[in-house]
Amino acid sequence: MSLQNHAPIPELYVSYDSAQKLKVEAAQLPSWDLTPRQICDLELLMNGGFHPLKGFMVQADYDGVVANMRLADGSLWPMPITLDVSEAFAEKVEPGQDIALRDQEGVILAILSISDKWSPDKAVEAAGVFGADDIAHPAVNYLHNVAGPVYLGGPVIGIQQPVHYDFKARRDTPNELRALFRKLGWRKIVAFQTRNPLHRAHQELTFRAAREAEANLLIHPVVGMTKPGDVDHFTRVRCYEAVLDKYPAQTTALSLLNLAMRMAGPREAVWHGLIRRNHGCTHMIVGRDHAGPGKNSQGKDFYDPYAAQELFGKHAAEIGVQMVDFKHMVYVQEKAQYFPANEIPEGSTVLDISGTELRRRLREGLDIPEWFSFPEVVSELRKTSPARSKQGFTVFFTGLSGSGKSTIANALMVKLMEMGGRPVTLLDGDVVRKHLSSELGFSKEHRDLNIKRIGYVASEITKNGGIAICAPIAPYTATRRAVREMIEAFGAFVEVHVATSLEECERRDRKGLYKLAREGKIKEFTGISDPYEAPTQAELVVDTENVDVDHCAHQVLLKLEQMGLIRA
Image (cartoon, rainbow, N blue to C red; front, side):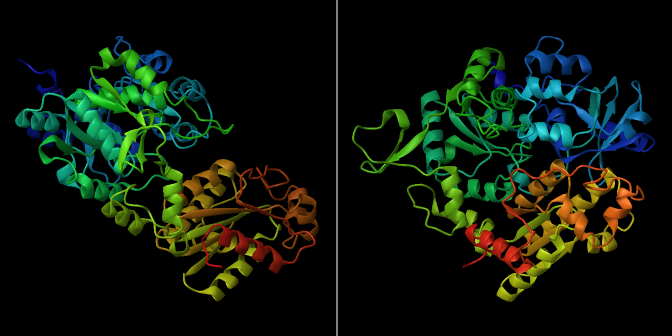
């Protein structure tokens, strides 16, 4: 009996000898340095994880996928896999040309033969793939504010796998997993897709899913890119390894998937199903709100909680993977065990801890009960997210020139140094321009770059447990958001809008800049000839008119105390 999921799957790699030859020839080709997301995509293209794709999508495939989840030949595929590049690079290359694709150290991974080059309508892509052109969605924000404006499509020749230095023994290609299943004699395999640490409810759920499907279990967590703010993959993998021995050894495997998630809900679920089929799985657990990105700009969920299960169910035969639907598991105190929420014995006491509540308990250093999670997992989580009062954080002042940002920032710095306990660094706009950005002018592009540099330094300070205080003008919402995402990967980001009015700032005009701007001697001056996009969701708004500096700095301290970042 031939088992479909045991047969090898086509890869895009050439033989070792051809690869050595191509490496030499590729030295003459134009090179594109891949972004982290593109490296994830390329790896799964080359190793067969994205089969039947033979390269980055050409325009006809892209258009079909955006419009109706179909490649030009009619095959089901829900996610655009595109190579986005800058305008400057796109101008240098034409269809019919080969380019070398390199990682961030310059190592050549593949050659792309360009067959299409086009500028996509990103609003149409966002609405088609993610259901709305709303930058509250992390992938839509990425599409508009990070991804390049031009797409290149064409077949890829794989030269070598991207290099990973971490958890090497846990990373398997689709063919390595298929060979493992062949060797173990596993015929039915249920995949568990996760981007979170595993707690007891997940363990119960996966046990049940494997039992229901009479299948073996593959714990297949994503370690490429997940949602900004998720627990980093190093911590998560240590958590998975800590609970692996709670599973029967002969029936469970753990393998890491280097996928860049898009958080696209229903379409993402179908995509995950196709990827799992390529890895040799026959079943997949699809959760409530599978791969959902959270709330949209109106504060509502982006996707209906069961939309992913419905779309997957509709296409299950074509995906080639059966869905095991995720039951929400809750702990019943009297029985001291987990039950699906719809099978709770009457009159029992149900205990449940939400993700938000778990994060709160970690943040405040509170107890996390054993019925909820394994002590080994909790201790790993506590290592990377200690109580908030022991973490680094960034206070980011934004406001017009002359609004009083630097003065309050200085006062805050002195107060925090007086308290002691963590190193405090002030990244003032003028000081940063002198030491980090002396070559930059004041165009929008240069101002954005300056703010991103400040954000990068602040994120490093935060990551290492220090306090960063920043006081640039930072007029643009998208740039402030990029900085917030950089910093929130490592600690808290506290945005303080110094909301002094333009009239008051002009009246103060200490440096005489407004006068020069009014006379047209300074171009693109924020508030006069260039917009200031006031924050709508700052953690704190302070007004400096008729209020002394000490009071303003004290308001910030009270906010930090309320957030648990400093001890009262």
